[in-house]
Amino acid sequence: LKSYQQKVVDYSQQLKQSRESVSAATAKRKADKTGFLPKIDFAANGSIDLTNLDDWNAKKGAYHPYTHFIGGTVTQSVWAGGAVQAQYKADKIQENIAMENQLYTLDNIYLQADQAYWYAAANTDLYKVMKQYYEIVKSQYEIINIRFQDGAIAKNDLLMITTRLKEAELSVKKAEVSYLISYQNMNILMGLDPNGPKEATESILASMPMPMEISYVDALARRADYKAADMQINLMKENKKMALSKFNPQIALQFQGGWGTANPNLGFDPTTTVISSLSFTMPIWHWGERRQIGRQMQAQVNSSLYGRQIVADNINKEVSNAWTNMDQTYEQIRVADENLKLAQEALDLNTYSYNEGKINIADVLSSQLSWIQAYNNLITAHYSYKVAVAQYLKATGNIVPSDSDLASQE
Image 1 (cartoon, rainbow, N blue to C red):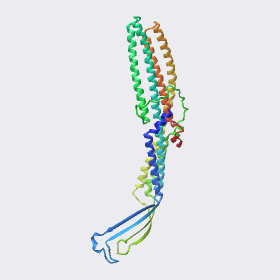
Image 2 (image 1 turned 60 degrees about the vertical axis):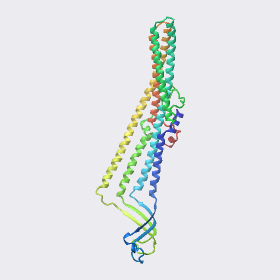
Image 3 (image 1 turned 90 degrees about the vertical axis):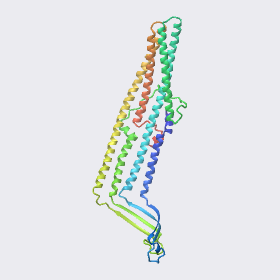
Image 4 (image 1 turned 60 degrees about the horizontal axis):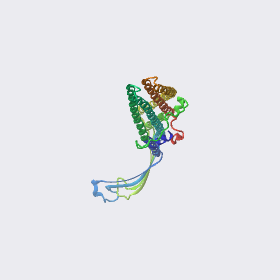
């Protein structure tokens, strides 16, 4: 199982997609961090007054119909109302949310891998049992056919066992279809040819200990989707600060230098110019815009609070249901195992009794049917239990092995 999980993780396109989301969030954070730093820009411009081209070579001090300038600008935002700081904090939160979403994606991939693996294991064992069932019926058919040829029994017995033999053959074919499809699904999850090699799985009947019960509160502390929902609240708070920052004082410092003509150009030689400027703006009255935007953004903060509680309630339900399901299916294994032992004993006894002429064929057919149903129930119980274990581990945030790269990062 562990080997298969790793192959699924290595191929998973969903995980690769979530990694790109983390990379994008990281790049955005680094890009917005430059808002703290000065900006340097280069510019060149020129103009010609086409209505006064005759004055192109006018004397110095007179109007010349052209200008040109080449230079650069250094701009430093001293205070942007807190927008730059809020944006950077929001980007950092968004990056962390993307990381938690990646971990949540990994949880789902492990669950998907476990389900596919145990489904293939169950269908493998079921296919084997169906073939064993066919051999049991066939063996009885051969005995009855010989007796019929010898005139020891009526044809009715032969017809009944022949019908059961055909039913068993059909059951084998159906089991084979499920077996092949389950391995196709396994291979697809690994990115392999669906009809490629069928690697042997563990038997679905292999024992698996029940995980320790974990409280709902402890599960919340480990669930990546809850952590992301909690971070979403802080993200909305930072978005509120950004939205309201335009109503705060704005201070910017600028240096501009270059070489060019005056404007208007009076024919004097181009000169080097250096200009320093400091701008300050303070919003005074915007007709209640700030109050309404504040209400809008606070509503988004409140919505994220409700969203976190919705996630918590869903996790609470998921943990409770998964534990109940796992506990009950574990008990079903014991009952199904005892039932199979009884069915095996009845099959052996009825087969022997019929061959000794003590009972009729209907009792044998009934015991054969009971045996295959009991075996099918046992396989189903083991499959349901192992899937329930995987669902419980996922619900409590423990499905990813501790030695996984992403798990260690968490």
